[in-house]
Length: 175
Length: 175
DNA sequence: TCACGTTATGCAATTAATTGCATACTGTCA
DNA sequence: TGACAGTATGCAATTAATTGCATAACGTGA
Image (cartoon, rainbow over all chains, first blue to last red; front, side, top):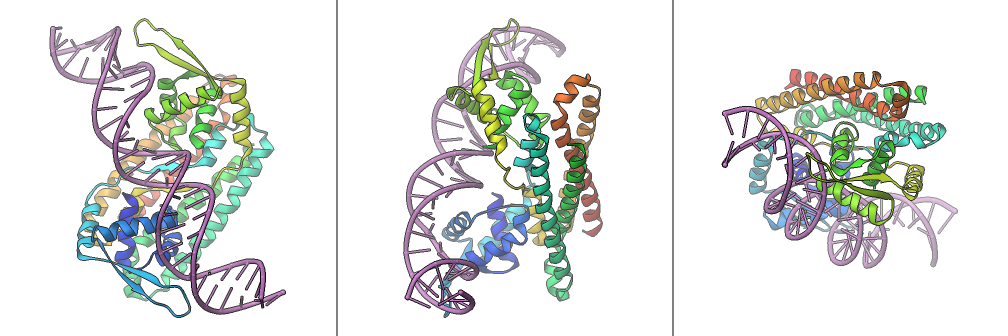
């Protein structure tokens, strides 16, 4: 259900092809909801069948053809209906935490290495988030307005990554 | 895969019935990896078929019979093998954040209400984590030692909930 | 005694997500 | 010119997760 909401929401911000949507996914919503190109294309087919999105095939000269999707009137209604529902509660699903939870049989060095490598990833992600944050600050006011809500989620992303780093440091000290 | 690791890891800490495991799940690993009783019973059947867990049916006087599972020697090997693999990276999957991301069509009051209700949930969760944390501190040293790794994950849980609260407060100010 | 909550287990159907494979066109660099 | 990266789309199979339904024993309180 959230994927449907995500796709309609992305198309509400601006139309685009499956490929373009996937890229926007990866640099925004994808921080909080992952998908694959297979799943996304499938969802788009489904939405199109239901008449919730319009689809226009666009030929390109230096690239393969693409199908540009946009929100239809019925799609906008469906989006409003989905937004009217309460969001189900947050669920963390983290293989690293499962591993650490179950990690007492493992050598401390092995766990340290694992935590360190994840720390690096989180550091990279934090850097990326900060760049995106600054980029959004430089957008023209009208566009920035439209991206206000995405920006709120990015702020949480930044807080989360900082929390990860602090925790990794604490754990490294204790292992 | 993580469910398999989770079940083997919980059984490594101590044996128990599906029902008991589910309760332990809900108050520990379940903060980072959710499951349902259906999924858990199914996984236990699978693990038993593969000879990774032993199973003993125990009759009880004032309650229905139960099946107590415990880690077999082969199960311990499998657990070690799973722990040797690198954990795949963290994935946040949060319907609330999808909703907020897509929320520009929604009335600010509606979003505020949603954030407020989630804030309450996170506050409750934080309280629970703190109680659990203190309870673990009171365990006899030998047991506490065994639960050292679960405790590390609980620490992250506490940090996450604090982060949520701070972010909710920030967002409430901006909506 | 009947309803309700807790303990205890499971099947079946559906939906969602992952993984593997596949095609095809363009531009760039060696 | 051949390999590789990027753009662009998709099918099929499998695995995981959710949802709905079902059973059954016991204890407690109305």
